[in-house]
Every structure is written in C-alpha cells, then in structure tokens.
Length: 110
Image (tube, rainbow, N blue to C red; front, side, top):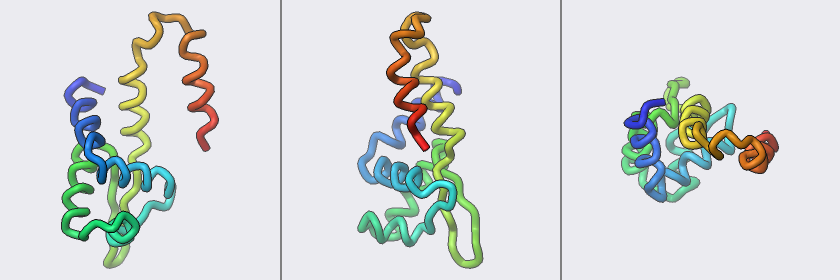
C-alpha cells in the first residue's frame, strides 16, 4: 500500500459514522448488509449513508455488489489487511518480541 492510499483509508475512517459502518460490516462478514439495513441500524438517512459508503468504497475499505434490487456492502478485508500491514510494517525495529502481543491479539480474530 502506498502512503496516499493509507491516508485516504485513514481519512475515511476518521469520521464517526464511517468508522461505525466499517466496524458493522466487519462484524457481518462474509455476508455483508444491504445499504438500507446499514442506514437503519445506525439511524442515518439513506442518502447520507450512500455518501458515507461511497467514501469508504473509494478508500478501498468496502465493496458492493447488486443482488436483485438491493446493493450489498461488505468490508474489504484485503483493504483492511493492506492498511494494517502498512501501519505496522516497520514496527519494533525488527524486534519480533515487541510486536508479539499485537500479533497474538490479531490471531484471536475469527
């Protein structure tokens, strides 16, 4: 991941509603949620939610696909992985023991 892509992803997540949307979609992997359901769960108007989802999509953090009349949104876990690796790539000056607690906690994710 390039710095500009990381900045775009972090900027997208630096807004409360978008952060909540992303975390909601991560919880609903691998099935995702319809845009209207995301808006309902977060109590956000649908047109406002569409704008937030567009920002997250352009930042490489969510993907969408049409199912009949609904658009289903999913967290882009490859984008999350790339952002996370970008952030910790030079971690700990090569001392793996310093990063061990972080790696162990990430390994607990299901």
